[in-house]
Image: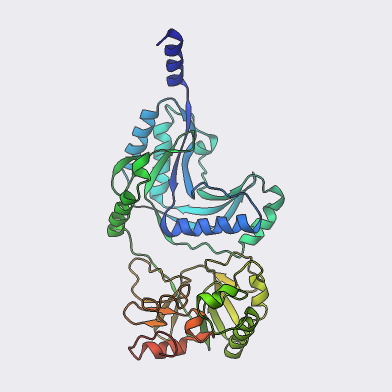
Length: 403
């Protein structure tokens, strides 16, 4: 090795490199943000952002002491176990940047401040990190949206982000090549290299341990007993030609299917009735938008988005996926999918599964306490809560309304 090579090697050691310290979302929160990002990108023809949903804790920072950086991050994180936060609506910065807001717990704020204090002596920190007012957020879209900025914000007014407790599981150090350098796992209490951080089996261990110690999900239930008539319904899939074959629907064409679905809905649900719609109103390349179909349907409609619902919705009240109602001494958790939050052992009303999983997700599953109101199981007609309660009280399970 020549003198010039030695000089370059020393110079490389001295050169400061940039890093980010962030928390990458997982589970339900990750799915919620990805769905929202995908919908915005599709609706406004934006380039797909491949970065995983995350909360930046510190950075972008610069230092030439990577070893010390890792040590200080680990030492700070060792002081914490269950670090909570909540997703909290949509906000924006004037860059422009549109984001999902985050309400931090005291532990999260203390962790970030501790990181800043530990890193400040040997790192060049940004003004944002040193600002006493720090806005925790998860970026949805940025760059190249100036002309679409106001339209995207209006579009997001019909999206509801659930305020559920989420937890910081790992603190991730990202290098200047935007790759994972390492992660500290707060649950397993160990430092992971890049390969380990991406190992699904190790993450499964994290989740197994996490589920043993996490707090039970708190679900609020609104008493709706004073409403005279309440219906639930899911997955009509207006305009979706392939659903006829996929779910063996008794229709010869989408035109016939659309007509029957509208007629059945309006024959059952009157203007003064309440209906909780559990998602997937329409689907297909040449479909009409959701608001088009909502304009043809009666009742006061509360809308939980399904996995195919990416439109702006103005003709219904949008509620988040995971809404609890109490009706005549029964509690029902309304969702598009049958996901059961930790610690909740009550009834779940859902759609999503259609008639393709009748053994596990029939109309009424007494053992698992699930109620599948996908349109194929309920004669393509909204089902009243009174009828559901009468079926529950038989003590029997029902594949469909026909038994």
